[in-house]
Structure formats: structure tokens, C-alpha cells
Image (tube, rainbow, N blue to C red):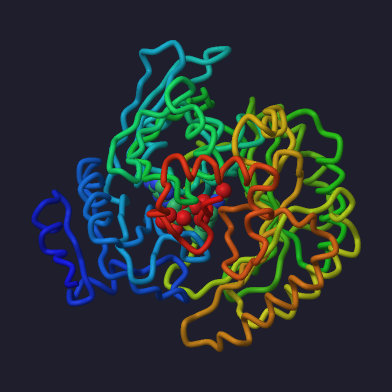
Length: 468
Ligand SMILES: Cc1cc2nc3c(=O)[nH]c(=O)nc-3n(C[C@H](O)[C@H](O)[C@H](O)COP(=O)(O)OP(=O)(O)OC[C@H]3O[C@@H](n4cnc5c(N)ncnc54)[C@H](O)[C@@H]3O)c2cc1C
């Protein structure tokens, strides 16, 4: 049966692209250019009513549906081969709600974090303690083109996470188009089961999120933020200091992440970098950071006073587009983040076939993440402290086999140090036990919720929740 996508194109405020359109290649392009799945059509939705039309069209045509936000899922989950992709990236309104007792921001799923921060933090000022000017912010990641929905529906870690919690912990309400094409208001009182599932597994094929409301937190306009880098031959001392810094730390104001890459990136010497910020007065931040600053012989130390958005902008500016990629990794076991793992990481970083590749510890558990009960949301990694991401990135002209072999061998040597839990936002499309690795004991409950809201498995991707 011929599927008349032109009918959908006429009906929507946005537009529909098929493989016969010159814009098709650009419409299916993902952050990871290695993944080239071919949907039959991509419906770029302008608003929630377009999403309703697209869902009903796909149902009638018997097409599986993929949902695309910013297209950054490393395994390419946004595209469905031979199906219809509902692209919500253009639904990007941002509305600050600062008149309610708890300030919040209501956003379209496609809005990027820097656009949200501009409204809540840069352009909005509130008086804080001791007359220090504050803005509002909510935890986000460093990449300006990751969609807020894709980030927070799968968890969401960033420099504010240790203090305020995950991205998903900030969601107070959602608007969702379900598999029947009905618009649902979802929060603690309405569809509480779906609300539970969205916060950790919302990207796993339960419905199309067309709006989210996030809780906001006051944040000083000037913070101590920055990066310190050391040559890679000092890495083991830096790893140890980093591990010990967080081992029994209750104070959640100092948020530092680790990165093994090159300086200057991508064609300099291998380095280990600690980067992050202190949420509090910069003077207290200087004291908290002092033990780190005396470690080894740093190559560079950029820590200083700046705004949160200036710092996040700096992190985002280092992201390179148009590369092929593969991500692997996971959370360290209770004793895994130790000398044997440090040696493996240094060895493989030195041998990386591509200078774009990196190892990233952007995740800190503990703090506010661990203060929320494990069963409160579908996010199942709250008890883990450190996560490692091995990120293989290479130029499209470079040999794919060589880069894939590097990350596979790296991962197999590091595996004994890892717990087996994997962060769902850093999806590995080759993971066979993904259901357990991403969702742990929450998976059977997610399957029941899937059955209730999508009994025909309309929203389907390589690692979407399966029907029970
Ligand atoms: C360069 C880079 C930097 C990153 N930095 C961080 C970071 O600092 N912290 C962190 O936690 N993560 C980070 N990530 C991971 C990122 O948060 C996840 O991959 C996220 O899911 C991407 O969302 P997206 O909408 O851009 O991607 P997509 O691939 O479009 O979507 C991701 C998944 O969510 C689903 N989805 C997207 N939007 C919706 C919606 N509106 N309704 C229902 N389902 C939806 C998709 O179907 C897909 O399964 C980073 C990724 C990259 C590539």
C-alpha cells in the first residue's frame, strides 16, 4: 500500500520530508554520523497538534514511530528504519513561571539548555543572600544541541546535579501525546504511573513528550568555575586525589568532573583535566578547591569567577560536529575506581587511534542524586558514585574498524572494574542486556506501563521498553 505522506504534510503546521526530498539527508542526520538509518519519512512538528496528527497518521498507516529531539542518542535511537520519525526539535518555547511559590520553567522538548538558561538565569535577576545577585537555573548538560527532553527523560547529569539532583528530578509536569494520539497532562496526580516512568525512561518509547515543566533553583550570578589540566603522566595521582575527594564527601557544593583528552583539543598532547564549579560564595569555593590546586604540576588552571552560562558556554564550545562515534562505559563497582582501572584508562588513551576520542567522568552520584529514593522514579543508578564514558570519535574518512576495535578492547579490559549498570543516555546499541543495565529492577514495572500507554508498541526503537 502506498503511504500518502503528502496528506500528512498538508495537515501539519510543520513539514514532512521523505527520501524523495533533497532535504532528506539533513533531516535524518544525527550527532553520531556513523548511524544512517533510513526512516520512510520525518515529520518536523511545529507544535503538539502536529504530533497528534503524526501519531494518528502513523497508526493508520501501520508504521513504527521514532521520536527525535536533538538527535544525540549515541546509538541512534531517534531514527526508526522504515518508519515515521516524529521530530519535536522545533518545539522550543521557553516560559518562566516566577510568580508561583516554587519557580519553574515550562519548555518545548526541543529547547536547548543554553536557550533556557538565557531566560531563567541571564535575563532574570533575583536578590540572594547578602545582597548577591542570583538568577534561576536547573541541572543541565554541556552540549547546546542536546534537547532538554532527551537529556532529562533519561536522567540528566551536569555540574548542578550533585547539588540539586538529576534533570529528571526537576520535572514537575509533562504534556505527552500517547499512542492513541491523545494529549495527556502528566504529573504526581494525573497519570502518576507514566510520570514515574518518564523520569528515567521517558526516552524509551512510552509517548511523545511535547512540553516539560522544571523546578528552578536560585544560583549566584558569579561562581568559581573552570578547568585544571595536568600532563597524562600525572594521571594516576590525579585519579587517586579525585576518588579520595569524593569518597566520603557529604558537602555537595563542589562539583568536579574528569576528562582524559588532548590539549589543545583535538591535536595536542594527552592530558587529564578536572573541570567544574562551586555552588556557593567564590571565596568558599577557593578554599574547597585549594587541595586540588596543589596537586602535581598543572599545565593550565583557568578557575576564576564567572557566570554559570559563561562556563557552560565554554564547555559546549569544545564539542566537534560531523564525526562518527561509539560510546561505551558504565558505573564503577564499589571498589572498581582504583589503581587497576586507572592503568587501563591511561594505557588506552595513549593508544587512541583518533585524537578526537576521549574518556569522560562527567557523572557524580552522591549528593542530591542519592537523597532521592531509588523507587521514586524510573532512574535506577542513584547509588553509584562514579561513571566512565569511553567516547570514540573519529573523522568520517578515518578507518571505522580501527576505532571500533580500540573502544571494544578498552571496554573489555575495563569491564571487571564496572558494576554492569549503564547510563541509558549514553546508549550502546550493541549492549545485549540493555534492559537490566539501564533500568535494573524497574524494568518489569516499565513494561506494564508500556502495555498500558502503548499496547501495540507504536513507539519503537532499538532499545525501547518491550511489551511484557
Ligand atoms: C556531545 C554530547 C554531550 C552530552 N552531554 C551530556 C551531559 O553532559 N549529561 C548527560 O546527562 N547527557 C549528555 N549527553 C547525552 C544526552 O543527554 C542523551 O543522549 C540525550 O538522550 C540526547 O537527547 P536528544 O533529544 O538530543 O537525542 P535524541 O537522539 O533525539 O533522543 C534521545 C532519546 O530520547 C527520545 N526522545 C527525545 N525526545 C523525546 C520526546 N520529546 N519525547 C519522548 N522521547 C523523546 C528519543 O526517541 C531517543 O530515544 C550528551 C550527548 C552528546 C552527544
